[in-house]
Image (cartoon, rainbow, N blue to C red; front, top):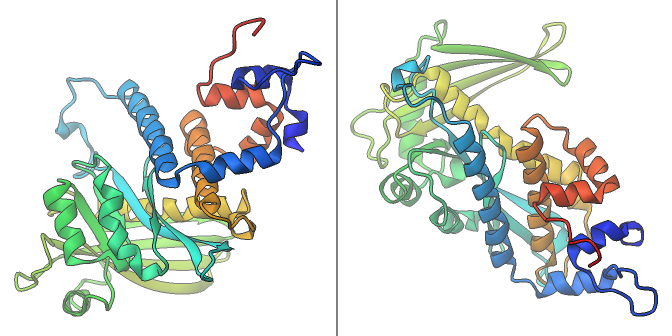
Length: 352
């Protein structure tokens, strides 16, 4: 339906061929687009799209750089200038491969801009995300940034790679897959002053009130997890709008950041920043119906996932992180020229 309605101006900008009979631009047919996508190397497509996103983000960051006279002391709190990169996986539920397994992708997303910076295929099983973690980050420049990930990636090799090879920091979830670390965290949790958190916050939305309390504890010297310095404990109490408690949960994290590098407030900011990647996956599912997509042949599922990332990232970079993606997508669908402007595709010369 979209192909049938693309205006001649947009087709000219895209350089489509001209009919010798009508003199008008001819839009590519659906089978042509499908064949073209199937012929694309999905890893190369990812790298092209992600390189574009990183370049756009760097340009935007350069324009927003603070005055050179500012110093670190201008930050209100310790760690206020730290930014995060969230790593998380997602299965494309409707896209089953020939062997019956689902297409699974591991992504890296910038906390602040919500832009996807990298994506990598995960072979067959979700647990293989562990093996893809380092290849995903290997192509990214993340010096000084904080990599956030769930407990699956709380691995000795991953921690060493982030700190020693990438010169970055980490905040990883802590669960039973690292029993020594988990047991030490449980002991530390039992020693916190429950009535005196180091940071508290409250958010209202979606018909509930979420209250967070944060404590930080130094990791015992006998714990040898690479570069680990502190445990972070985050309690979330969810209530309805009348104040009736619905749930209480406490999550545990480990970080290489020292007490003088980031305080409880900024550690929580980085922890909560990780949730942006879950929101990104939700948008792919709800706005773009990714989980309902039956596209499954060859490399098409991954190519389409990359194009969804491109659409979301382009909108975020242009309209900000609070942009309504669904509304923007509908608007851009009605205005192809605006979409091409967004992607930096220049107008064709008059008469061509």
